[in-house]
Picture 1 (cartoon, rainbow, N blue to C red):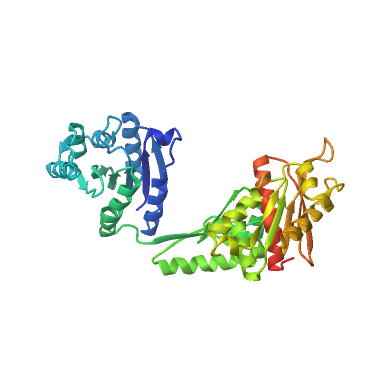
Picture 2: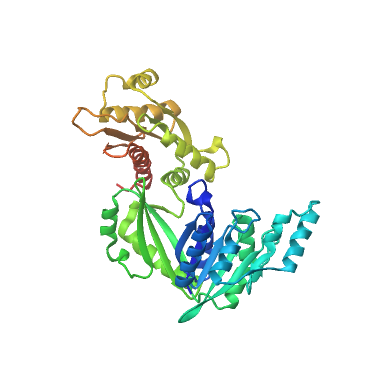
Length: 417
């Protein structure tokens, strides 16, 4: 069995809101061993809804629809389902009584328009909704030469949709013997090389058709490896993922910094805690990005209060003039590696930190040269420096610059080169 999700709403197709329902449903279906092959989003248009439902029923065994079950004129799901199936809408008396009772408990009279929510395509099943006035609809649609498609329409309100899936849809799918295999995944986070260089190091691990499958995505210089596999049980999936994860660590070494939602600042903050170290920063080329990330990590990670944070603070310097006023020992050094080293030393001394981390301004030494920035790390015994060429998108360049600084510190804390 394979599935498709359909999210209905003009607010989704215009970009005013994001379709988070399909993401959640895909994860839930994967846990049941049902792969989702398509995500479809469609506006509040009757003809478009009918067309999308018809296409989905032909290519998917299970179609889960969210949205369009309210009482307003732009809620068209039930009508589209009935027209697609070639059956009339009929009133379900029990559903109408349930909706009327819900309004009565709230001390309100049910508007006449809400009666439409008790109308169902003939032959459909009612999916109970204990949290709202919109029952769901389950409809079996015949297909030539193959088993019927099962279409289930749920409200677009996430809290109602999730409860109805858990209470009714999931048990029904299990009764139908859906899936048969569990699907699981894991994300490994890496930094320090380009996408093609990572792929070369990984070799056959990223080959098409391999099980587990390993895909590569890149976002602002962070490389994410997505491991996905299926097996008859959770334990078997975890074993297969663990074996591939071990191979990834063997091939990539210190280029791996975390997993799932980890960012470099989380890896650095944990290492600072483990080593009993503290950090001070000064940055001119990133607009405070480095300080912002480290401050956020201090809130998210494991220390109990700001007073116990290993990140002691830092300076954000928008211009060289301000830098020379606040850090007079850096004047006269120009845009040079020596400037970065002196900035790192000053940050460490002024805040009494174990480590000082500095990022210079982004500048070109000549009009025909690419913009450069220097990153320096200083401790009582160590000095390290990286110079970056920042051609390309400025936003990505700043993120790459801040991540390079964090990675320089991470490697020093790991004593890895």
